[in-house]
Picture 1 (cartoon, helix red, strand yellow):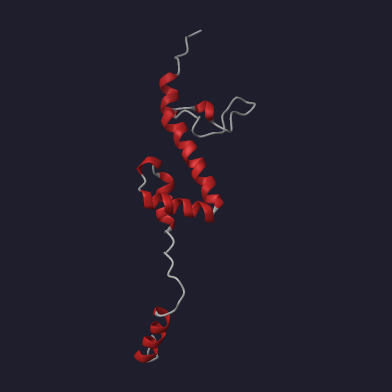
Picture 2 (cartoon, rainbow, N blue to C red):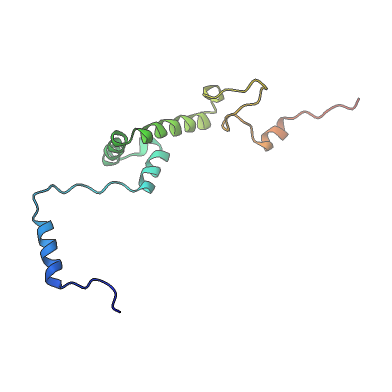
Length: 119
């Protein structure tokens, strides 16, 4: 049993001819999810003008991506500037923080721990 398209070359040619001569405007292909993720994770000052326009277009079509971009950039600022006071979650009543950016790493905790004196 043969697989694939069973029609003729002329039928494909006629179909493509109709598509090529249609009066509908040709629109640009939307960016891939990988491209958008790269834009979100990159520093804003490294964008080219076309990339900025494309990202603004994504933001207008999807407000969730706009919010995600703002969250990622504020988190990046907290990490690079070490601004734990800017953490929106703060700490819990037990004194433990719920924000991973504000939690010191185990290596940092061990380095700052004071040895206990013998009693």
